[in-house]
Image (cartoon, rainbow, N blue to C red; front, side):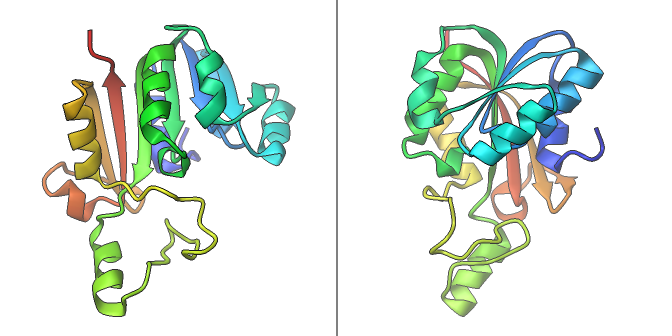
Length: 198
């Protein structure tokens, strides 16, 4: 699973074998295929982009076209062991509602997102006065799919206010893992494993 994007590799490492997953915003199905092939996971996917759906289906994956903001409401409660939302939270119209549904349909949920408080983002705004364009945030302000600019501290506060249990948290700087100390400044991406309150 070394050819997976770093946040997906973290998720794959922590998914238990033989479980049922729903990958929301699954892209071309790279994570689903890796989990199916290495951990015998029963994987389902939901993806907005028709080209990505076709690519995932061509891999023999069960993926349907749909919108997380609308279609997650149709899934039954606790129908998956894990619901996964990777690099999609910040593109949702109502990320709070999407997270509610994610934790409703999955017994646990993985959420990964870019950290908009990373020092490079801060420096770009401070010194250049412009929205950053980086390797991990390559779109310009007018063509980015990101509509909610979440930070690690924002997310921690959000889950804390809702009493959502954080079962695990991993942080990435570039393609390498970094520590939790000052992650809001030094991590470019975050991966959280969540469980809904009892």
